[in-house]
Image 1: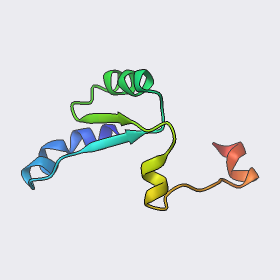
Image 2: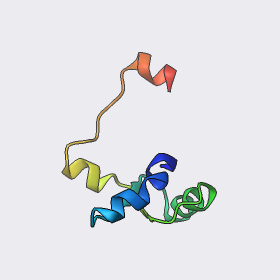
Image 3: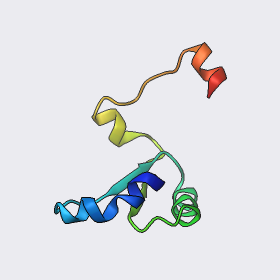
Image 4: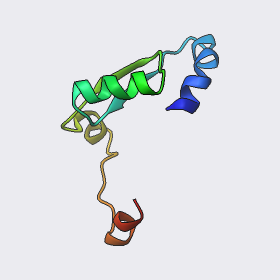
Length: 68
């Protein structure tokens, strides 16, 4: 998210807006935004509704879970 924050000026210069969607409770999403000094919106989606709609939710293999 920090990299996107650093590029926010470029994104906005193109006429776009940046919105992050975090699978966290609203208070945790706010804490993440504050901790990382984000100036763009960080929304909460605890049920992963948005990523599911775009087919982005997946399950990590057991090996990958250990890494993460």
